[in-house]
Length: 293
Length: 151
Image (cartoon, rainbow over all chains, first blue to last red; front, side, top):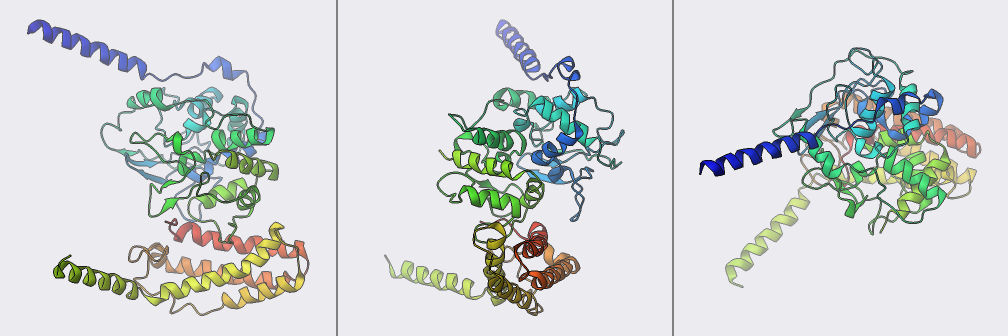
C-alpha cells in the first residue's frame, strides 16, 4: 500500500513537472528579430488589416480607433476579457516594449514578462503573419497617440484564471499552418494571408469547441454570437451565396448585396478594411470563395 | 389522440397566434420604413458600386425619396417596450431607449446626409458618390451601436 502511494506520488510529481515544462512559454529568440527594421509607413496597412483598433479602442460609443486605450469588454464562456491599453504610453501601454517583445506577443502570445496571453488576443491568427509585417506595424503604432488609462484585469473563473494553463492549450491548438490549402492563385494566397494571418476573420465567423479553439471542420461557416443575441453569419459553405464582387464591395462600402448597411462589431472591421487597396479586398473575396469545401 | 390533447393543442395554437398578434404594430411599421430606405439606397449604392450605370434622373428620384422617407415623423414608431429584450421580432437594442438623445442625434445625421445627397445626386456619378458615402456612414453608426446581430 505504501509502495503504491509512493509510486502514485512519484507519478503525480513527474506529470506535474511535465505539465510545467510543456506549458512553458516559447518565445522567438530576440536576436532573430532585433536585426529587422520597421517601416512605419508600410505598417499602417498592416495595422488596419490586423484590426487592432477594433478591440483596443476605448469602450465609449464614439471612441477613436487610433487611440488604443483598451477597456472594451469581451464576454465569453470562460469569463470576461478586457482589452488592454496598447497605446505607446510608457507606463500603461506598450511604450517601453522592444521590437522582439512585440513580435513575441503577436506571434507567440507571450508577454514581455514571459507569461501567456489568453487567446482572446488572436495570436492564433497572427502566428501566421510575416515578421517584417509585425515589425512594420510596431513602428507605425509608436506614431499613434499615447494614453495613460490603466489596463483592467480580466475577470475569469477557475481554472482559466491560471495563465500557465494556456501553455497546455497552446500545445493542443496553436498552429502556424494554413487552414485553406491546395493550389491557390497568387490572389487567393494574398487573400489567405490577409484573412488567416492578419484580419483574423475566423475568430468570429468560425464556431469553437468546448475549450474555445476554432473548429476547422466548419471554417468560416458562421457561429453563435458570444456576446449577445443572434449569430455571426457564415462567409463560406452552402449558406453563403455572395460572389466575389459582393464581398469586395461590402468590405469597401459596407453595403450588403441587398443594400442593408453593416453594423455590430463588423462595422469597425469595414472601417479598417475599406482603407486597404481595392486589390487586397478583391483578394480577401477570392480567398473567401476558395474557403468553401 | 384524446379530446384533451386536441384541446390542449388547439389552445396552444391560439396562444401562439395571439402572441404574434400581440406584437406592437410599431415594430413592423418601422421595419417598413427601413425597407423603403433600402429600396432607394439600392439605386444610389448600386450606381456607386458600379452594379448599374449612373442615370441622373433615377439617382435624383431615389435621393428625393430618401429625403422624404427620412422626414417621416418618428414619434409613434419607437414606443417603450418594443426593444429586442421584449420581442424576437425586432433587432432594436434596449440601448436605444437608454440613450434616446444619442439615437435621435444619429437619426438627424441621417436626415442631414439625405438632404446633402439630394442636392448632388443628379450632378454626375462622382458627385453622387461623394454623397452616398456619408449617408451610409450614418446608417452604419446606428447599426453599430443599436442593432442586434441577425438570427
